Image 1 (tube, rainbow, N blue to C red):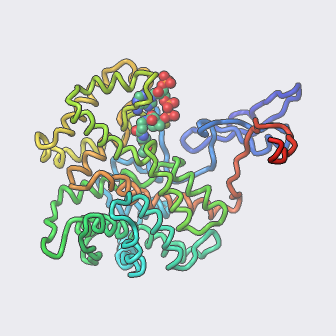
Image 2: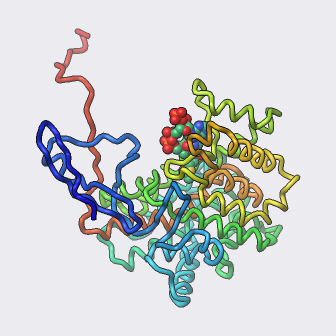
Image 3: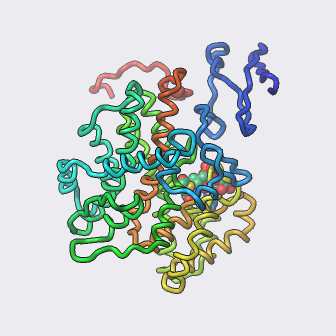
Length: 428
Ligand code: ACO
């Protein structure tokens, strides 16, 4: 155990305990800082601030390592299913086959949404962004199902977890069907999670969906890649909202809202828009690379860079390698894929990106794969949300089960006016 940290402030020396995580992450516990010194810390973007201790996901951004409950992501990508990985993340260990069967049945049985909720869809504009609809209908689950919050029983929480994992897929596909003016396709209990999603997306009363095992496997793998990523913007939003003891559905809705942003899960859509722009412009990828390097231009290369990874994002590496079959089927057919491959090759050679350790992130290749599967661009972030659902719930469960948990409430350094007298309107 390292020594306490010593802080000398205004000539007074104080000690703060240090702690080390199971993978060597070092921290200074400053819980007593304000009480003992009157000072707070200021850390925009929480770049140096740990908000909690967690046993769910380990990331080493320098080495490009990502593990769920200790198991490396590539082993899960090769051997596991989305629902098994969801159970691992939610419960802390891999399930027995009986446990997995029971959870799978529970998810399958929970996939229908109430008809009143389906009818709510009719009142959204057809061209509404599906993340907007997903957020609204996830929040609406709280109106249809029992309130689940920090004080609920383990059984109530487990049921709500299965329901969220099941219904996010149903809401997503119903939203898509409505956007194209087609009848919704109800969940089919005989299909696996990913098959069911693809069937609800792409089958219709007049044409059945031909299942391609490579596509089904690629989707399972993509969902596994997204299951959790420790204290990112959306998981932190879920924890912050949940810390007020708001219900679980409201907390998850906060995660969906955070994920929608183009600096977070919205980046996979931004990547496709950028590749489309490169294609339409007829210019070479290097023109766009130069634009991204120009500090007078706010343009950034979407799908590159990450707050934590200063190495190749392991998810991007797995997606790129595991899905070559699917991508190869598209090779030559999709100019955007060729542009993406050329862009990545040029970026990895460029001094600007090398010096700043900017590598492709998960969103760079996931968008291409979704496109290859026939998923429309504005649904990409929804796919991210479907994959991330178990992680959000696991983060929430871990937080509410910790008796030491407090409501999240950062402080600020106020820099506004000092006391100012009110001026009546006639005198202004
Ligand atoms: N293109 C060009 N330059 C970049 C990029 C990029 N994609 N990303 C970072 N930089 C540069 C910055 O301009 C900065 O340069 P400087 O040191 O000369 O000022 C330096 O690299 C560090 O960048 P920051 O913005 O300080 O890094 P931060 O950790 O705050 O941001 C982020 C990370 C938001 C992901 C950023 O890399 C980015 O905007 N990338 C593009 C959007 C994207 O792909 N987001 C998806 C992230 S993955 C996910 O959420 C699932």
